[in-house]
Length: 176
Image 1 (cartoon, rainbow, N blue to C red):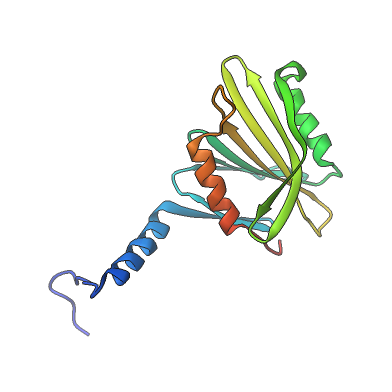
Image 2 (cartoon, rainbow, N blue to C red):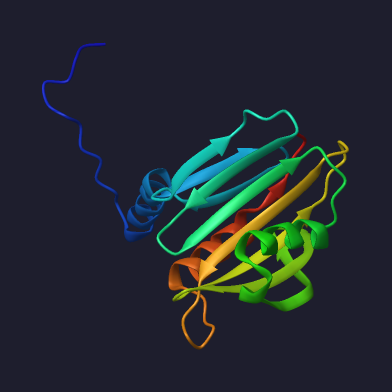
């Protein structure tokens, strides 16, 4: 086959084809896919990505937006969600938090995860932290954590709401 002398142009014949192409391009450029240690989900590609994989007993991944952080921890220890949450509370100081829901559940994809929600106020910063235990067959503890900014009325950020909806619709448990 010969080379094209100018770029090829694709012209859809109807609006449905145009819409499908726009959706595909949107997914290619705007949506990232997180897939590590037994879970997978979609998130905004604009989020910064960081991983700490040096420690053999503890691994973490962090996806950071402007208001929302998604953190995934894989820990080689027998921790309950409460014990893990207590560790986070210690970092912020016991006087700076309140438990919003000690027995919360969330449906992500086809899976129900159980956990705890806490609010933290440090100086003028107010955040809500959702901590969920991820089912695991390999003897390690896995926690999926959503940390979002909240306003004075306790409402989550728009970024947090939209991203959580994307995670809910795309979440899957996989073999690690």
